[in-house]
Image (cartoon, rainbow, N blue to C red):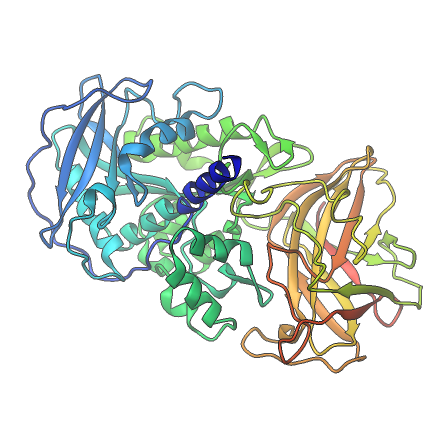
Length: 561
């Protein structure tokens, strides 16, 4: 029974993070629609709303089912539109929890301030009996129609914003790309605009846990395509959700350091390629959150960040108040980036990413497992084995769910650092705190007795009590070290330099803590295993990691001055 419950919980969670179908296309025409009918049932949640069913007409004759939640006070109201493929009738209690957090009152969407409209996607649940439409563009076209219908209702003041996480965030990008005239702000949470290669492969290694989860809940066709395109061959570029230039509406993006998406790259993409309006009114908030725990006051992995969730929800409220209600104009002057500095557990602000004043500092691997800012002097390389029959387990990290795996920061000392096939390099206890913000890079010199192998890295914060808490991790397939487009197999015994980059983070190693780098040949099941052979027959690879004056392997940290 416990196994069945865990399976059901996994299915429900992963559904909430499945990909929305990519879209691009022309905007739908406007139309006139009748107002929604009289309330039909009582609100199924502790917040006082009038709940009314609706069927929103689409420009092609389809009708999408919706639930409209209206405050008990007199309108008209600005409206929040939520488009879901996961059953509108079941979402509201969860949305209430997401809005209010674990202990705060209903403070995100004020019950006296906003109307909330929850719509089932075309083909899903109460909207399933509809013509399929044009698959590659339908999400955005339907979003356009929903926005414009909501804006025309007598209870709406004509200003509409969109909100939602993961797939509910993806469709917001698509909707905004079609430029509904009454769409005034969007808030995608833990959702990226891009469908790029590295969404599925890190350093050329399949993100197995993420991709297989999609198969588990019925998205096998997508998973099959991902498995069929193991290289960056252009396939993923053709299925991007949108182009940043297509979004011309204020946007607040909400993410987490332990989410499955690195949204600092999304921010920089919009700053580089986005429209002038998007650049001006784009806001990014990144907390210590996992994908499922975004903006919640709860454990993220094995650490509690009690001051994170409430602040994040308040910033979201301020953003909508600024653009939909006009009652908090100060939100227009808040910094572009609001980010959480773990370790110190405090919020910081910046106009750019990485923040100004960050300097890359190399910490060199030393003989005997040391890690120092001074170049290495040892001559003997260290040995680590990559054995697909005995992989190093995944413990924490940017995982999709927390039922089959821990998602978020987790102690590596018990199951990872005791594994026989890992190398550990640690600094001395720091005499003073050291803060980092940005991308971490690990530059290693490696040889192997095999034609291919993987190099997995984990950076941890070692507490005085011995816990080795994960900060970030990554991996690189050695045959794809030069290019992700085609393999270049290794010559056994030859030394290769490899650069491994981890997702962005912001963290403080406190005084008395240690910086640690863990190197291994696997991180399973987060990443797929390497057979270590050109033919695909599984074999153990014996690898050497060099740290001498000619091969200065190093952990490069983005140190804040």
